[in-house]
Each structure stands twice: as structure tokens, then as C-alpha cells.
Amino acid sequence: MLLLLPLLDGCKKVEPAPAEIDDLFHWMWGKVDEGEDAEIVEGLANLDLAVDGAGLEDPIDGSLTVLTTEEAALVGVTDRDPALAAGIFLANTFPCDFDQLEQILSYGPQDELYTGVYKSYSRDYATDRDDWLAGDIPRLEYTLDYTATVITSQYSAHMNGLIRRVAEFDDTDVPSGPFLLQRSVMPQPGQFGADGEGKGRSMDQDYQLEIYWPHGGDRVLHAYAMWRQADWGAGFDSNDSGVQRTLLNSLIDWDKDTAKLCEEGRP
Image 1 (cartoon, one colour):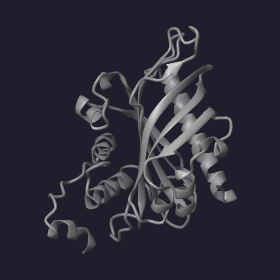
Image 2 (cartoon, rainbow, N blue to C red; image 1 turned 180 degrees about the vertical axis):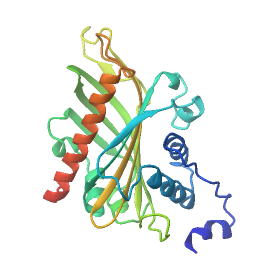
Image 3 (cartoon, helix red, strand yellow; image 1 turned 30 degrees about the vertical axis):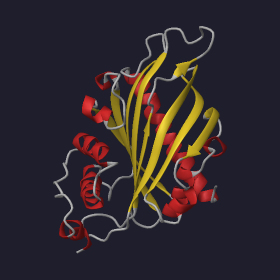
Image 4 (cartoon, rainbow, N blue to C red; image 1 turned 135 degrees about the vertical axis):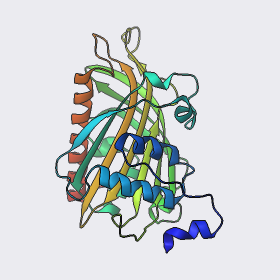
């Protein structure tokens, strides 16, 4: 079987993936860089079961336990306490051809696709997008700088990002592949306002993990985990349930916009 080949080749042992949603997101976070495809496929099978991928129609969401210092260090953040970043997750489904989804996720000027979201946006690739889209390389790496408004407050941030494609697989326990892991990390705190306008507001930490996999026909499942430490002033911070609900609703709207882009064949 294809999934046994890494073991036969002498690679490290494939450890069992967890079964619970919270454990799975943490486990997947630790596998983005060094995880074997076979390991990640097992994790996806468990995640698909945990969110009832076969029957999922409406979005499901909830809270996540905080990242550990070791998990934050995996992405180079060692100068802040990740326990201060509140964790949330969303699992959703929308119609899209998977090849078209890869075009959308990897497109440079995202502000051209998602209008009204960013005041400014720029992405610089560290690996070649055309090679990635052609399947010649498994990882598309980039940095991005953006300015956006959240809860009437404008902030700017720099982020490191990557999209990893796990190769097509064939196994009775999981949907057919390939599927994608997308990770975005803010290596340094974001900045609010200018000339004192950002007083009392902060965007100290932002860790995001997205997982996309096809599930029959043109249906895509999207699992999203975010750990964020931010304070927008006036008592609105990342631990506030109202703020979390607003953010989760915006992620659902993002999927709706992505589905529309898929329908229109953009970019």
C-alpha cells in the first residue's frame, strides 16, 4: 500500500494521530513542517470524523486550548507568552473545484479578490508559485504585509505564510486527496494607528492554521484554527466571547466569498 512506503524506506515511525478536535489541531500544527505525508493523512482521517465531514452542512465552531511555548517556538516566536493568545476553531464546507481553490489561495494580491477586507496588501513569494501550482514542489512559502480594520480600529501586520500540499492518496478511511495545510504567523506584534491613535490597542500574537480537503464532487471542507492575542480597546479583546463570535462569523463570510470566486472562475 502507498501509505506503507515511508516505513519501508526507513523513515521515522508514523505515530497514531489523536481523535479529538482540540488535540488534532495542536497535532496538525506540529506536523506542518516536519510531518510525513502518511502521518498527516492519518490526522486528516481523524479530523474528518471529528467534524463529521460526510454529514457536515452547517458550520461548527468552538474554543481551543492555548498553544504551548514549544508550539510557538516551532514558528520562531520565543519572546511572547502563547498562553495569552485565545484559541478558536471553525469547520465549514463550501462548493469549489480544488484546482481553482489552489489558484485562489496562492494568488498574490488577495485584496483584489476579497474586496473591502484590506486597506493595503502585498505578498512576496520565497518559492515559485507556478512550480507549486504545477505540483513540482510541495510548499509555497511567502511573506505578506497588510493593513485592515477590525472593530473600527485599523492595524498593520507582517506575517510569514506557507501552503503545503499533501500528495494525492488512496485509502478507504479518508476522502481522496490531495489536500492543503496553510499556516500564517505574525513573527512580531502588529501596529495600531499612528501618532498615538493606537493607544490602548495591541495585536501581540496571531497564529493561524487552515486545512482544506475535497469531499465528493466539488465540495471542499475547511477547518480553521486561530490563536490570537489582541486588544481593540474599550474592553474588546481576544478573550471576549462577542469578539470571538464576530471573528467566526467573518470567517464564514470569507468562505462564502471564496465559493463565489470559485463560481466565477477567478482569479
